[in-house]
Structure formats: C-alpha cells, structure tokens
Image (cartoon, rainbow over the protein chains, first blue to last red):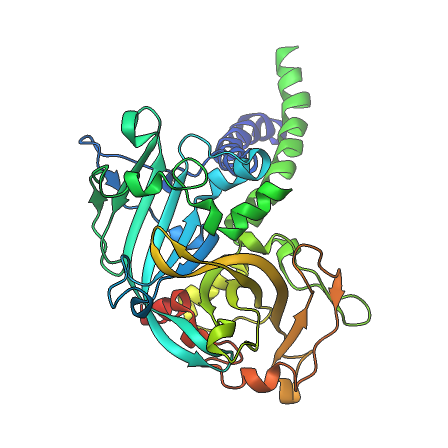
Length: 195
Length: 195
C-alpha cells in the first residue's frame, strides 16, 4: 500500500508542483520580461496605459518654472522620467536602448518654494502622464523608431492613447542626445554610460 | 525495469528540483525581503553602503539653487529621494513606515538652465549620498526611531557610515510631516496616502 502510494501519488504531485513553480521561477530569474511592464497595443495601434510605472527606474527630473518662462512654461513645471526595468537592465550593460524600451514622463506643478532645506522648488500635484516607446517596425520613417503617447492626468488617466503627431513630440525630441531620449538631462543614465 | 526507474530516479529528482525552486520562488513571490537591500550594520554599529539603490522607488525630487539661497544653498542643489522597495510595499497598504525602512537621498549640482522643454533647472553631477533608517531599538530617545548616515560622493562612496549627530540631521527632520520623513515634499508617497 505504501509503495503504491509512492508510485501513484508522489509522481503526479511532483509534476503538478514543478509545473507551477518552474515557470514563475524561470520568468523571474532568467530575466523574462514581466508582460504587464512592456508596451501593449490594441488592435487599432493604440498604446494601453502602462501599469505600476512608479516602481520603474527613475532616471532624472527637471523643473521649468512658469516664472522663468514668461508665466507659461511649455510643460507643467516639474518633469520626472522613468525607464521600464526590463529595458534598464540591458542598457546598463550596453548603453543602448533595446527594442521595446518604454520611458514614462510625469509632470507636476510646483507645490512650494521654501522648506527646511532652503528656498527652491518642491513638487506639487501630478498633472500629466506621457510615454515614449521604441518600436522600430511600428514607428519607422520620420519617427526614427520612437512613438510618443499621452494619457492625461495620472490621477484619472485614459486607458489608451493614439500615437501623437510627429510635429507634437518627435520633432523636439530630435534634439535628444541619444536616439529620441534626452539622456543629457538624465544623470542616472549618463552615469551608466561613464562606466 | 521501467517501474523501478520511475520509483528510484523520479522521486529523488523531484525532491532535488523542488528544493532548488521552492525557496527562490517563495522569496520572490511571498515578498521576503532581498537581504542586500535592507539596512546592514557592522559590529560597531556603522551602516554599510546600500547597494543598487538607483533601482529603488523614487518618491520625489526638489531643487534649492544656490542663486535662490544667497549663493550657498544648505544642500547641493538637486535632491532625489528613494525608498527601499520592501518598505514601499507595506507603505502602499498602510501609509506607515515599517520598521527597517530605508530611504536614500542623493544630491546633485545644477547642470544646466535651458533645454528644449524651457528655462529652468536640469540635473548635473552627483554630489552626495545619504540615508535614513527606521530602527526604533537602535535609534531611540531624541532620534525618535531614525538614524541618518552619509556616504560621500556616490561616484566613490565610503563603504560604511557612523550614525550622524542628532544636531546634524534629526533636529531638522523633526519638521517632517510623517515621523522623520519629509513626505510633504514627496508626491509619490502623498499620492498613496490619498488612496
């Protein structure tokens, strides 16, 4: 009875356990990209809202105050830039943006101008969520491999976005230091390139 | 022969595979803290340099330009604040800093004042790396549960740091909105508290 149990029950049990464990383990440990963090498009080519991007890798921030731009800065005032972790890992080694790279930009208003750390600019409320995606097949020609998207206010974002017109994003981004990414303003990426 | 093989070889094989897979899987999926990301102290109570903190969760940035502070800002000018991911997860649910929370502050000089996005302040070179650790046993009394540490320039940091004097950090941090953390300036944490 004992031997029969061993043969009949343990073997299938092991198979069931293994199938449930091997796949998540391989996914995590061999660097398979968690699908929810990679650009997904609907059948009309609209980009779906990225999830959980505030745990992505921060690469840099800047501030363009209204008062330094004639009362109306081109973008609401603070910018925070993130890079999707599955793209960041190969960038660390190669210094290049892999196909499928997703960058996120959040903008925020200035929330205050004085704190115990001194006078300056401190982050206020979130205003805009935008992304850039490297997909050389989808965004060829004058887009030079990059599509840009906007999802509105991060507190109540749109669920999807059409690719924005070349004149609205790509033209300005052609002044970026690497492909269409302004790494000249992103100290975390600049630092990786030095190593 | 076939049955003997099944009984003799498959069962130990399963055990070996399972033992190698279950532990990493449990560690990742049940939220066990990766030890390398949690505060570690040497036998003299010095904090060891945290590793890989640039992949931690960014919670906010601010800038205190020299020119807005009589030519000499109290801190080199940009501040970037990170929270260790194993602390961020419970904070999302509770809005409280769990015991063992580690925060990192990096400061950077202003690198430029004009870009295609407008006039403002853009991040330059890294200057300082500092951390705050919540450890109510180690940092009781007037430290109110928090120890602060400095590791010098992030490009060539010290390997360990003594806890800094109360007068150097904790006193100022008593103006923070939650415990000794200035969450009033960290939009990502403020946003979690709203939910």
